[in-house]
Image 1 (cartoon, rainbow, N blue to C red):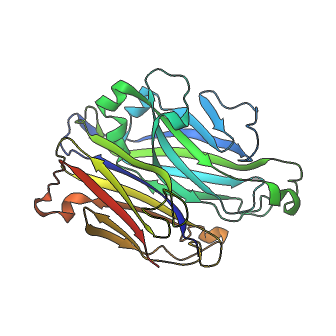
Image 2: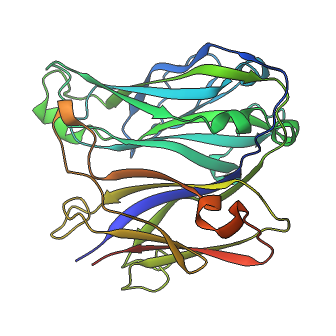
Image 3: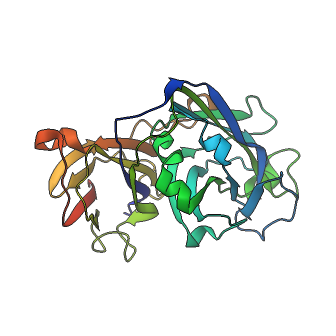
Length: 326
């Protein structure tokens, strides 16, 4: 039996004093029906909208202008719509933020700091059978602190990435109109913001800890030891921090007998040896009208609620441990 899933984790410090407060409603479409192609194929040369970079057939990026970053309120909703093209299987996709050195017109995704802010699993879809698209909605209020952080904006441009890996091979023979095609999905990404507008928020602290890391019991480095289902991440902070939150995204994979796609195991998260979270992935649903599957789980761990005094002081090496049950 193989256990396999991927996770993302980052920690953000949230300060709670603000200035220049007023009501703000704002929306911004980052990608509008951008077309994804065969993830294994050579990168296509089809034109992209102005300002968009095609890093790979499965990964697009666009820089958020400073005027856009400054326009968000403290309540942000992220809307994703995935429309069927010529991939009729369930696939994994995500939205990332990339922190690119200021002024660069492009970048290598593997050479810059990135965090994942949302993940989704597509349903099985047929582009000829309605409904042919599926919406995903996320509450991402924490992004306002990142978008307006003066230290981050002084050093980096913030790029938004929309990623969706697909292949057309089954659809080439199973879906009418897909013979010989290599396009797989259309993707739309929009941010909608309401609530309080903060012109000059206090500086926050952001620490990416892991980006789409494999977690399995058969691959070197994927767990603390091959054959086990525990993985530990250690990190060191120089200064104490308050109001820290950990953001964790996991998705379950492995279609063989006993694999994570079909078995709802308990998962446990510990911080410095203390268990702070336990969860069991949700019910497995694959129809288009019930497209949220057990394979995707997102959590926020608010650390002050877990430690006496509501204050988390980190001065040495700390550890976060992930464990999957048998």
